[in-house]
Amino acid sequence: MADAASQGARVVLLGPPGAGKGTQGKVLCERLGVPSISTGDMLREAVTEGSELGNKVQGIMASGALVDDATMADVVRDRLAKPDARRGFLLDGYPRTLPQAETLAGILRDAGQDLDAVLLVDVPEDELVRRTLLRGREDDQETVIRERLRVYREKTAPLIGYYSERGLLREIDGNRPVEEVTARMFDLFGVGAAEAAGATEAD
Ligand code: AMP
Image 1: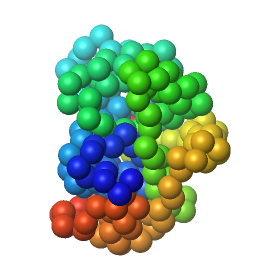
Image 2: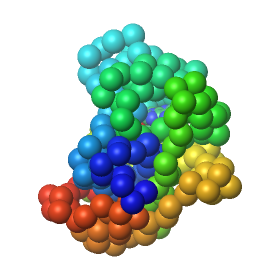
Image 3: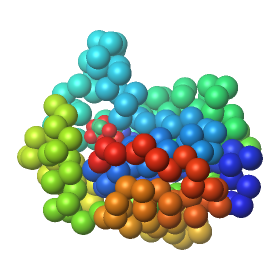
Image 4: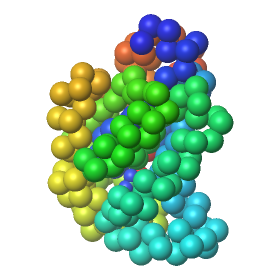
């Protein structure tokens, strides 16, 4: 990963909702010069636009459940096919299930590409609930947050073992001040800390 900043990189950000993936992802992708691709942001945009996809996922998102793997496969395949993702990408919020991880592996294989790293940002559960309530988005009521965490443990946490077995997992303690998490992350990617300032949100 020593030349990550000059060569681009293909990175997955993994971690529970509220761990700061969004904040850290935006800083890291700027530093690496690759687009940050957040499936949550894409779905929220679809809901705002009132598109067919948006109408399909609105209720599912509001409940804290996951959108089905086939729908997500279409969303991600289309997005990764765009020219800006050719040099690399930082995926935030995908994959979230083992079948999604297999779908991503297939998309990359077809393109003759590989993942460079999966970055796990982890934070204790009580801290996650506190942070997410502070954020105050519409899908952030406490029952929904708890449901999102339950779904994370059940469906997404198995990806930690999956990527660990493949030698891709890098772990970061997200329960530290934002700048420290950023510095540690830059360390892992062998890039300087020049753009570390300016990250303040929880996710
Ligand atoms: P996020 O902003 O990443 O927490 O995503 C917000 C919501 O969008 C999630 O709670 C899911 O309902 C949906 N979502 C986002 N990404 C995925 C995905 N990869 N698989 C299934 N549902 C997703």
